[in-house]
Length: 280
Ligand SMILES: C[S@@+](CC[C@H](N)C(=O)[O-])C[C@H]1O[C@@H](n2cnc3c(N)ncnc32)[C@H](O)[C@@H]1O
Image: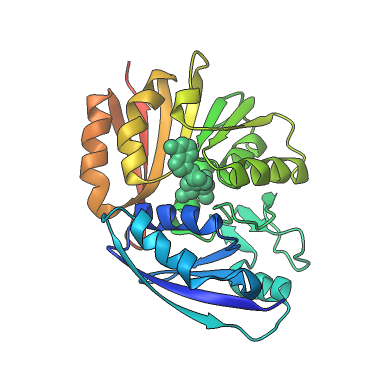
């Protein structure tokens, strides 16, 4: 199949802007994305590409950020192979966890082996924030813990928590494609104690959790940290990521206001993942 690559420049190039843009592109049959220094590259079957559709996205951005783009038809190639080689090679995190796709044959050995079917959902382990969250998870005792994975994407973090002994994991994601992909990955990893729901923090109610994982973005976290703490047990752990180093302070202020104390910080290439504990 012939594909067209559309290279987007986003100004300012924030995780929130990338997420909004990706969600809008998904409505127009774009089916794979690659983060770049200045924005992202998105791929669409050439037969489905319309410059008019892409231009309309600039209007949807509501003036919070500006987008410019260039489109280039790609030569015919085996896309599964290209995807496999360039976008998702097996990755080992923290020397203990390997993430690979079902089509990889040469997979390094590790204590935790997670199979992720790369679709449109975020979470193959290649993004800094996922890697940082995985490293935090590898340091936490999950034995018999009740876990919430907010913004679960592919389900990667919840799946690892289940492999590390969690009693039950609930994954929540606002996107239907993530809901579907997380379910597929849960099945492929033979996890039988993780459930996924499609929605946001309004789904949270009486169920309480020992550990909450939330790799989303700065704005959603600022809005939802209070809701997470309402369902976190005393001494429970909240892991937060999806924001840059420069946003740590505002995230931290919100956490303090919600009786959370900072335990550990992990950083990689401007991205941060913070571990908090609920004091009351
Ligand atoms: C940065 S990705 C993280 C995916 C995966 N947990 C990981 O660590 O790789 C953020 C995910 O949050 C989801 N999301 C965005 N806003 C949300 C919200 N308000 N509530 C729940 N999920 C949300 C997105 O659809 C996306 O799958």
